[in-house]
Structures are given as C-alpha cells and as structure tokens.
Image (cartoon, rainbow, N blue to C red):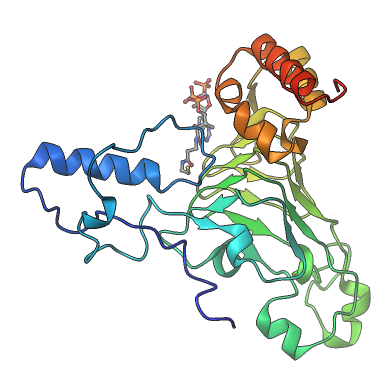
Length: 278
Ligand SMILES: CC(C)(COP(=O)(O)OP(=O)(O)OC[C@H]1O[C@@H](n2cnc3c(N)ncnc32)[C@H](O)[C@@H]1OP(=O)(O)O)[C@@H](O)C(=O)NCCC(=O)NCCS
C-alpha cells in the first residue's frame, strides 16, 4: 500500500484549543473551519478572512478524523473495479474506515482478493460520478458474494458448484451530483440518477430517477427535486459534462433555483467562448 493513501484529506483545523479563550470567537473559527474543509467546489459562499493566518489557529491538537473533514475518493480509491469521475466526490469517513474499507462491500479488487485468487466471473463494476456526496456509514453492496441461489433447495455456497451458483447483478452507477444519506444501503446493480438524493437509512432496491429523492425500506420516491420538465432540461443541459472552467464560472447559477437564469448564463458563456449552444 502506498503510504498515506487511506488517510482523509489533510487539512488544517481548529478542533483543539483555540488561541482565543473567548467563546464566541472560538465558535466562529470552528464554523469557518467546517466550511473551509469542504471540497474546493462545494456550493458554499465563503470569503476567507482578509487578515489572520489560519495555520496559526491551533493546529497542534487537530484530529485526523472529524465530521467536518471528508475523504476525496479520487485520492484514495485503489480498487480497479471502482471508477471515480472527476476530483470532487467524497465520503464522510469520520466514524468508519475509508470508503473502500467501509462503504464498498463484496467487491473483488481489494488488496487481499487481488493477491489471493483470480476472478472466476466478470466483476460487476462500481461507477461514481463527479460531485457525489456520500454520507457516513453508507453501504454500497456489490455482487461478489452472490453465490446463494434462492431457486436452489440449498442456498449454501459449496465450492464445487460455485460457478453455477454465482449470479451477477450488473454494474452499480451513482450519477454525478447525487447525495447518499448516512447509513443508506445501495443494493447491487442499482443506478442512482444524476442529482438524486437517497435519504438517510434508505435501502435502495430499484433504480432512482435523476433529481428524485427516495427514502425508506425499500426506498421509494418521496418527491422530485424539480418539476419533470425542469429535470429533463437539466439533464439535457449536462452540467456535469461541462469543462471545469465553465462549471466554476457558472457556480452562482448552479447554486440557485432559477433554471431560466442558468440556461441563459450557459448560453452566454458558450457564446463568449465561441462555442455552439448545446
Ligand atoms: C431525504 C432528505 C434530504 C429529505 O429532506 P426534506 O426534503 O427536508 O424532507 P422532509 O423532512 O420534509 O420529509 C419529507 C418526507 O420524507 C420523510 N423522510 C425524510 N427523511 C426520511 C428518511 N431518512 N427516511 C424515511 N423517510 C424520510 C418524512 O417523514 C416526510 O414524510 P411525510 O411527507 O409523509 O411527512 C432528508 O430527510 C435526509 O435524509 N437527508 C440526509 C441527511 C444525512 O444523511 N446527512 C448526513 C450526510 S451529509
């Protein structure tokens, strides 16, 4: 293992004693710390203080792990069967091991399985889009252990029949911009659409449409985030396909609810770059 690969992103913190003994200042600095530890592109409007040096803010006792810190997946994922798009998707790993150690279950391609055996069947892949937020203790159940045939009298995975016993469930896809609530479980072979929300504790057994919120066990839609026509147009606009410069430039429109303004800003940006409108 390469050193440091499993560590959460190292960021300065003020979780130890504040230099200021004055309680309101301590709380203010802690708030700044939480916001500033989110990935660079997170939709928070935050201005860094003009004066003062954050590194002076009690770095000594900063904890390695905290709920205000996140693990950026593109920095830690090593399993060749996990495909992470972009640099912004994260796991909130404060109370567990890393994303690969705790969230992804039963997927061939971890260090041990790569060393121990050759895969006997095509491995279901895990695809994670960009700007995906994965809450603490979520589980993504993969198909590697699907050797229990419910249509056989014995469910037991006997070695001599293992090849016949295995039934793949297909790839799992988590679309860009999705938010997976804490302790949610995503069953094998599921597609979570772009911008969808999985409520905390939900068990997702069916595909989730883009920009839809699902909750419960089995997870069912509780509402769409936007009217259907807006969702269709939003998906067609392909915000997560945009080049980074455009995404960053239009962030104020992305972090708003005015779809017409977003479309107009997108067209204006394309025009200014001499691009054809989508
Ligand atoms: C899914 C979620 C975003 C919905 O938030 P919301 O839009 O404010 O929804 P509301 O609280 O108004 O609830 C809407 C309905 O969904 C239900 N609901 C909300 N969360 C639920 C959950 N986790 N499980 C089951 N039902 C849920 C509510 O009971 C309510 O039902 P009702 O309409 O019958 O009264 C939020 O509940 C959630 O789970 N967020 C994830 C939080 C989390 O995991 N944070 C840590 C990681 S960042």
